[in-house]
Amino acid sequence: EAQVTQNPRYLITVTGKKLTVTCSQNMNHEYMSWYRQDPGLGLRQIYYSMNVEVTDKGDVPEGYKVSRKEKRNFPLILESPSPNQTSLYFCASSLSLGVRETQYFGPGTRLLVL
Amino acid sequence: AQSVTQPDIHITVSEGASLELRCNYSYGATPYLFWYVQSPGQGLQLLLKYFSGDTLVQGIKGFEAEFKRSQSSFNLRKPSVHWSDAAEYFCAVAHGGATNKLIFGTGTLLAVQP
Figure 1 (cartoon, rainbow over the protein chains, first blue to last red):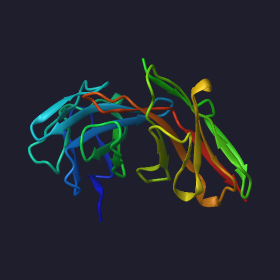
Figure 2 (cartoon, helix red, strand yellow):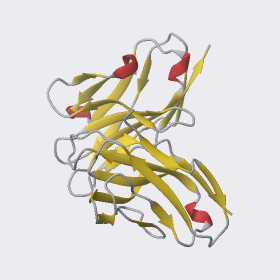
Figure 3 (spheres, each protein chain N blue to C red):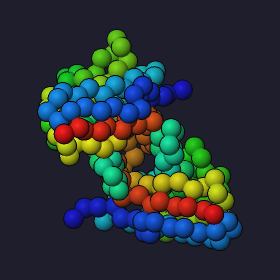
């Protein structure tokens, strides 16, 4: 089944403890991105990647890192999480760059930073 | 700057009643518009999209949307709502370019009364 998977689905952590949220897609998609969803703000893009080893900042990149060493994986790294990073995170992928490409979303990772 | 507005934060309809969710966009060129649905605990699923051509777009699950350039609107409709339609609905416009990001509205939460 074609899908985008994220792990973990739920995570509670403490301020400053490094964490990684994994994202994987099995559709051979070139383009991947991360969004965060906050009440009243909709979804905002954190980082995106056009292909392996090609990443760039989205609208709200502060406090996050990403890597794209393999085409299928695009992990989101919070090196020193803070409470304002408590949010619902979505990974998305599409076949290629382009407005006509449908973006497929993962199930989301709900993060609570104490 | 591009933006999407969903004026209704929360809507309640009775099962079997018709539904219309409003979406207004601000975009300089021809917009590429999307409606996504987020069921509880799930990721975002694409309902339909508009790129060009016929302004009435059919989607999955019996939804349709009409693009009205003169009103900068892309409202989502369904003639008869089912209890399983209870979810949060997001309108989005494709930013295009290198980021390929979607600019989302803040969402409309739909409740369905029996």
